[in-house]
Image (cartoon, rainbow, N blue to C red):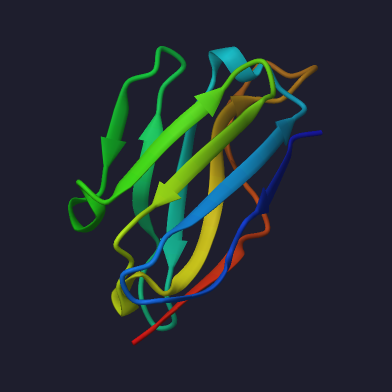
Length: 121
């Protein structure tokens, strides 16, 4: 089955940096668009960044120029480097895969369990 396991969240002061990682299994990683979303209390889940199988990237407006998404196909990981963090970045960050699970034919959205990022002022 598809598994997405995030790591790297934590508490950081405003202006600081964090790096999140997501380890993926259960699907053909090289064929899959991967992304990071976030959800803050009382707010809708929003796209942070996404990267296609070909390496094209897309970012939410609020993180452009501060966050960088990357992927390592050999390690089956996707990472999110977050710089110049501010308190508005506080949220649960979730790894996402638009994947065809091994043994199936259908592409679906899959989610990790999430990792908390808290930015203090």
